[in-house]
Length: 286
Image (cartoon, rainbow, N blue to C red; front, side, top):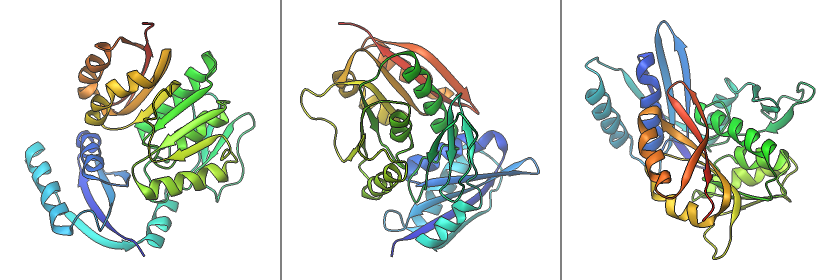
């Protein structure tokens, strides 16, 4: 059975978002945040086979020393997959998103009338909808799909599958969801089945088939990945198609905008919360 490392650290509120971004870049499968007494306690989870306990501690200690002069107490515990699931259940509560969406775990059955339920069991995949970057993507997806017809969408780095499932439940007839993590692919397939959209959402490892073009591409990834993928995204997006992205902080926004502006993208809408940004780009006609 797979085992995980749980890293716990308490930091100042202004450091919480950049620190969580660093932990995701380090390979965390998910992060819990708990605010109390003008401090934020973060618990980040890492697959034990991908990073050694001491290497994890050293990397986090180096980062915290570089950004803060304060001493930070760090602890790392080993935990099993079952314990991970129970840990998520303690804080994963239903959440209204945008005008129409409603995120809920499988152990909650009721939803407000008029809302579209996204039933998500996160497992070890990033994307419960509670993180600002996922929230931003969901809100912009809702706006984009509402404003125009989308026939074929791509979710890059699908994680739990939440963005692909939202696209399908908002009426997109074909959705391609890809991820390089086999565990994420399994969880995304399970969540698609749970939401009764498995016939619409195709979950796979790759997306670079020649000649394939999408009306909408969404990507909740880190800045470096978004910039590296810019040319491929441009190649596989239809003219006037929508590209919705998040996973980066306000400080990274100019670099992201520059990379896509050079390829003829314009910003249609912008979303920001807690220093995290989501952008909806439109690809120009050739």
